[in-house]
Length: 303
Image 1 (tube, rainbow, N blue to C red):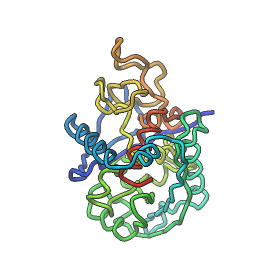
Image 2: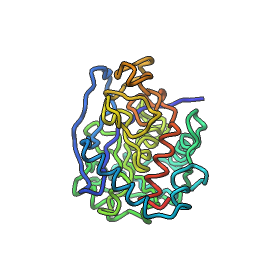
Image 3: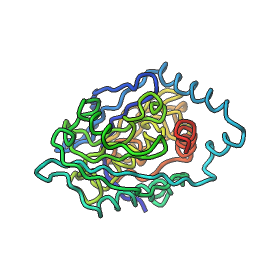
């Protein structure tokens, strides 16, 4: 049942200062093509990831047993309100259609409900509204730029539980970026997801035009790391049922295995939404990812 396409993730993570990096990692198996998945996501040190885990555990310990159960499981479905902010330039480039937006919401719901073949998470998405803005500076705003801050300060709607989804054309090969749940408290106006407008379903950014740039970035917004976070280490992405992966996978390299031996069983999770494979290759979240997203978004976003 799976289908899909590729994307790029640029993530601002954790409350300790909302770190940003433009470290465009290039893997040895990166395909030669005009458009490639590039990532500007901050690569967390072991100390930073452990600090996030400890901080989350501390906050969870302060909640009631009933609340801990609710946010650590997928028993109760939660519907997330989505505001889509369409940024175009003054010539009209980037002015995506209402149908593309509706299709993106459908892709998110299919991915997070397990329709495409993965775990059924507790997240569902509903379009709350759409804004359309013509602004040349915002249209090409890079992560961490003054233009990005101006755009978000002007347009952002709602609180921690509201998904603000911006579409634009940031350039530099970026397909998108997102903020992590734990960074919300320190910089709420920065919160949200930004995606290349042509990565939405029906766009021109093949092989990344099936909408899974959005799926991937929303995964970060809910608290998920890349599957290759930490490489061949015990903690890696802090999800037990995603096999360890040394580096991002590109294209759809079936049978790829970069962490070998009994310590790291299983081939690389190239079919996972949090890897870098083509949209047509990725189709699943794991049960562990569903649980982690529930816990992180419940702790920091109140979802």
